[in-house]
Length: 187
Image 1 (cartoon, rainbow, N blue to C red):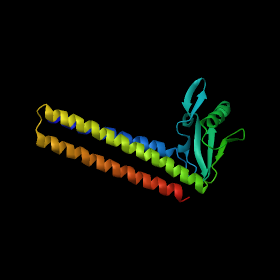
Image 2 (image 1 turned 30 degrees about the vertical axis):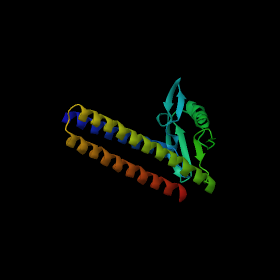
Image 3 (image 1 turned 90 degrees about the horizontal axis):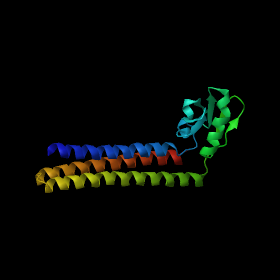
Image 4 (image 1 turned 180 degrees about the horizontal axis):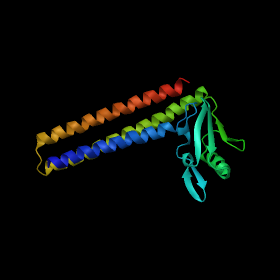
């Protein structure tokens, strides 16, 4: 029975870890007016008939704070990379000079910054909902174990551990969100 409780706690922690990982991936995609190769994460390029991540067909680097340079390893792929960036609709128009593609990131307006803070806040709330969902699932499993004969005291201890995990991960979301908001506002 103790093994079952340990598994419930482990499953809750894995679910909460997954929520944090997902939150970080979503926040990377919110651009802060600064050029970063992570902006292109998830963009797939048609490479000889198969969808391939952009970083596997080209070298992506920052030239300066507002410029990304994408240098495909094969010139034949240059048009496909440009097309993939257009289709990804990241809010930046690629500039193709025949050798490389440049993405010049425009500075963000105050209004756009506020929209991005709001959008990132939505991701933070989704992460908290996911964390609470993992908490709820673990609590239900623990309550069922108590009904099936597990001691009530041990059940209360396990519930307390799940609640402590929930509090820890919720604070982590708050910390991540505060850092992202600061990044978006102070540019």
